[in-house]
Image 1 (tube, rainbow, N blue to C red):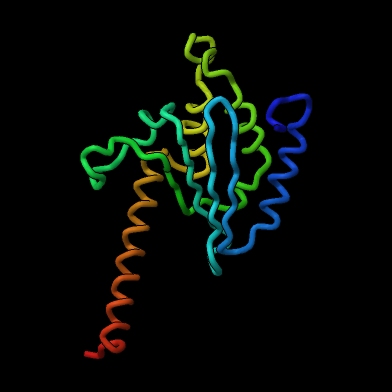
Image 2: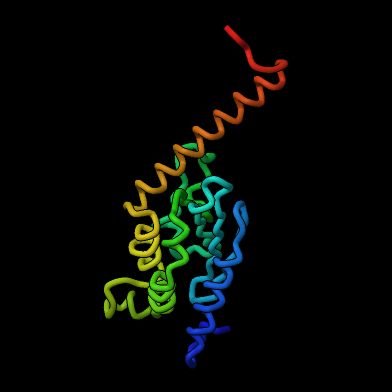
Length: 175
C-alpha cells in the first residue's frame, strides 16, 4: 500500500528499520512486495554467534525474471528449468538493515518495466534487484554469491549428516 507513492516511502522505510531492529537471532523476516512483479524477500538471521549475518531469499512467483535469474541448476529434475527462489547467504545484517539499500530498492523496483522494455531506462525493476541490489548485499557478483552459498549449504548438510550418523551409531568413535 505504501508503495503507491504520495510520500509514503518514509513509512515503508521506518517499518523495515523497525522490523530489523526487532529481528532476533535465528529469526525470519518476510517482506512481501506487491509491485509490477510481485516478490517475497525472506531474511533469515543467523543463530548466535553468527547473528550479525543473514541469508536473503528472493521468491519470484511470476515468470518475469525467472528465465534470466532463477535458472535451475543441474541437480533439478530435467523438466524443471527455473526455480522460484534464489538465495544468497553470509550477508552482513548491517548491510541489509541500511536504509540506503532500501531507498534504492524502493525507487529501483518501482520503475515501470514497460519504460525499460522500450529502451528509455538502462535497467528495469528486476535488473535493478538482481544486477545491482543483490550483488551489493553479497559484496560479490550474484553468480559467485549463489555458488558460495550453495557450497556452504552442502558442507553444512554433510557435517550434519555425519553428526547424525555418529549419534545413531552410539557416539563418537575414538581411533
